[in-house]
Length: 311
Image 1 (cartoon, rainbow, N blue to C red):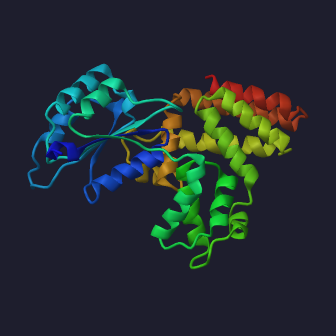
Image 2 (tube, helix red, strand yellow; image 1 turned 180 degrees about the vertical axis):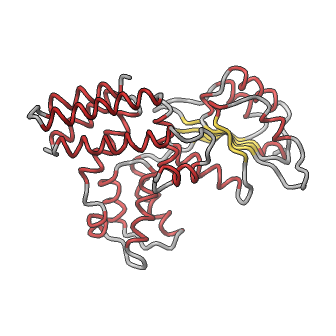
Image 3 (tube, rainbow, N blue to C red; image 1 turned 60 degrees about the vertical axis):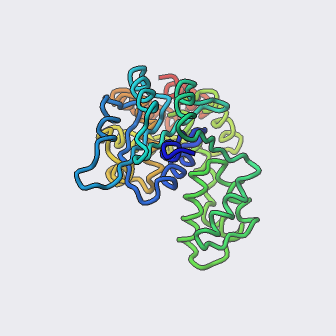
């Protein structure tokens, strides 16, 4: 294996959390320059390959590689023909379900680096959580890992965050299904979270399915609307911040608890203009007024969700 092969890696898969975690695990103590592919200006690779004045190694992390323009892709492919063997380049490509990375990118990376798919299937989530807990000296009982997945769903980022939350809430204790239930008893809130993710991700069929599940649980439509309003306020705060602000700073500026929330909310907020979000806020206000005036949730809520997801 050549030196170049060790410094170029294409990571791809459906889950952004897994991609980023793997990228930073590869980089170790190196602090990369991070570039969102959608914001590619040109010249990033030239700056990256230029030796540092202080002699330290440079590293570049490119995220959301599917958003690379034709010009950016051409620039990247040209660089990969002879990459700098001393400067690690990590390319993260989040794909849709059963999707693949761009063929041109995969073809360019393979001769000089590694192409790695990152995926955790449902049956492996519980062992993954247990192994993660063990590495952090958290005593997670296998039934508790199962309870976490059943309660919070299958997104690794949310499960990892929930594990840390449990460890902070019950330091030194063996984590059991009972503690999981105590910490995450607001299952209705979790369903609303999923609804918001799908609606603001512009996944209308998924959002409607999520709404139907909430209706079957007989959750109060005003409570659901409150969750949507809360997510909308967060997205407006995120949308008002500079696009290149690092996730940790963005989380602090927008009042979010976790870096992964900042990344997810930025991705959602960038699907809308600020004018769109203001317009959605007006629709939420109208829905609130309608519900409080006696309109039923089965009429008001699907209309609102469609207005968000189809915008």
